[in-house]
Amino acid sequence: MGCPKDYSVKGGMGAALLKRPDNINDILSTLVKGCCKPITCKMRLLPKMEDTLDLVKVMQSTGVSAIGVHGRLKEQRPHHQVNCEAIKVISNIASVPIIANGGSGQIIKNFEDIEKFRKMTGASSVMVAREAQWNPSIFRQEGKYPALKVVKDYIKYAVDYDNQFANTKYCVQQLMVGKSDEPEYMRLLKSQTLREMCAIWKMEDYFDSVNKERKEVEKVYKHRVEAVKKLKMDDGSTLYRIHLRYDKKNYNSLMTPKVALSEWCQTNKLDLPVYSMDENADRLYQATVKVDGEYFSSTCWEKNKRFTEHGAAMVCLRIKGAHDGSLDTNLEHKNVQGKDLAQKTEPEDRLQSSATGS
Image 1 (cartoon, helix red, strand yellow):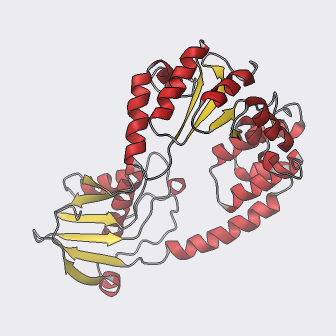
Image 2: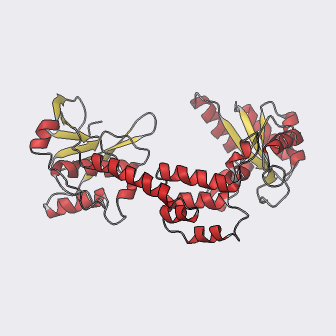
Image 3: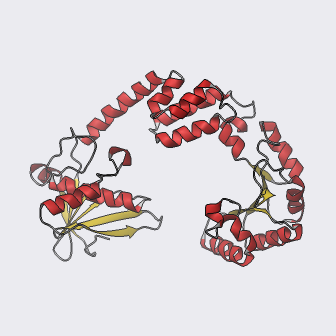
C-alpha cells in the first residue's frame, strides 16, 4: 500500500488501497491464513493522523508480522521532508514491529545514520531503498566503499553472470547518482553494449576473457545431443521430452522457436501447433505442444509461460531435425529421429495421463 506511481494507483493498487481499508483487511487476512511464511505489509501516511492510526490497527488485526511505514503522503516525493514524528506516533501505538522507511538522502547517508533514523522514529528496524541503490555498501559497518570500486565490482558481477545490458546500464546509472557531469557518465549514456561499458573503466580485457570462456562452454552444450525421453500415451500417441531451456538472448523477436515451428508446419502442410500448459504447486509452468498427432515438451519448469512454450517448440524442432531460429547459424542441428534418437532415447513408459502428459 505504499507505491504512489500512476500505473499502480490507476489500477487500484499500491497507495490507492490506503482509502480502502476493507480491501486491505481482505487481502492481508487471506495472505496470513494461506501462507506458512510471515506476512508483512507497507503503507504511506494518510492526510489525517487519526485515519493513519485506524488503518494501522486494521492491518495489525489481520495477523501480519510487521508493518513498513513510509513517512510521506501519497502525493509527496523524495524531495519532501520525511515525517519522522508521524512514524514515531505509529510505533508507540502499534502491537507489531514497525519498519521505518523514507530516510534516504535526508537522514541516511552512512551506516551510522540507519540507527539514527531508527531512534528518531522509534521503529523496530529500518528499510533502506534509494541510498542502497546509490551505494549498496551503505550496510557496511566499516564505512561505504568509494563509488568507483562499487561500480567496477558491480560490472564484474554483470559480466560474470551475463546480465542483460539494459538492466546493467540502469543500475550503473543509479550507482553514479550525482556524477552526471563526469566524462565516464557521459560515456555510459552513449554505451550500447556491455563491452563498451567495460571499456569506460578499462575492463574490456576482463570482459573478453570471461566471454571467451563462456562461449567455449556454450559450444560444448550446443553441439551435444540431449537425451530424449519417449513416452507412450494412453491414446497411443507419443510424448517426446528433452531438457531444453529457452534463452531469450539467443533469438531475435522476429524468429523465435514458436515462430520457427509454425513456419515448419506450414512448409510441411501440417496443422499449426497447439499448446497446452501445466502448473505446479510453486506456480511454475511447463508447456506441451501437439504437432501432427505427437506431443513435445521440455522437462524444464519456467516462471514465464511464453518461455516454456518456446522450450516445447525447441524440443519438437530438435526431434524433427529442424532449425529452431537460433541466431547461431553455424549450429549443426542433428536429426535425432534416426540413429541419435535410438542411442539416446530412454525406454518407453506407459503413462496413465492425458494427451498433454500432465
